[in-house]
Image 1 (spheres, rainbow, N blue to C red):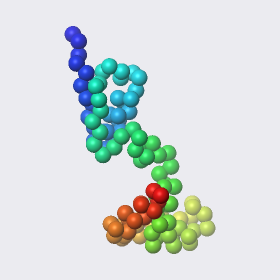
Image 2: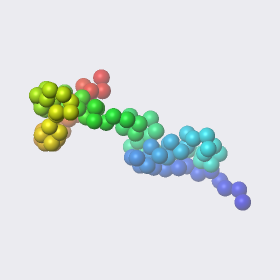
Image 3: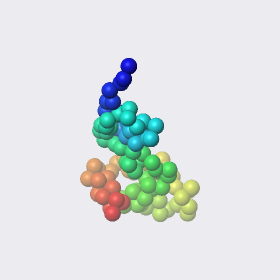
Image 4: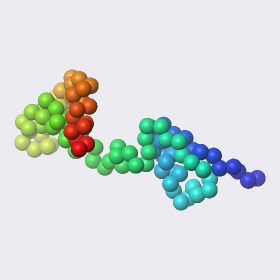
Amino acid sequence: MQLTPRPIPGQSAGAVLATSVFLSPLAKGKFHGAIGDSGSALSIWATNTSPMDDHLRIATFTSCKSIIDAAPTPEDIDLQQLADCMKALSLGELVAAQSLYSV
């Protein structure tokens, strides 16, 4: 029985997996497309090997920077205090920090 190629769908992390599978040479001819909702194999968060570095860098664009600056080394940063500070930021402050980080 011959199977008809179908699209492979996925949302968020599932979209990363769907597009990764679709791009694999092993899947050639098995799918005729990938439907990714809120993610893809090219999403930076899908392939990031050091997310903590990115989190700390984004925090430097906020009023929480002082917590990072107070630590003598990155290992000495009070991560709970930093998390509490980041949680207290407004959506606008977080979006602004992300925009500055992305430049």
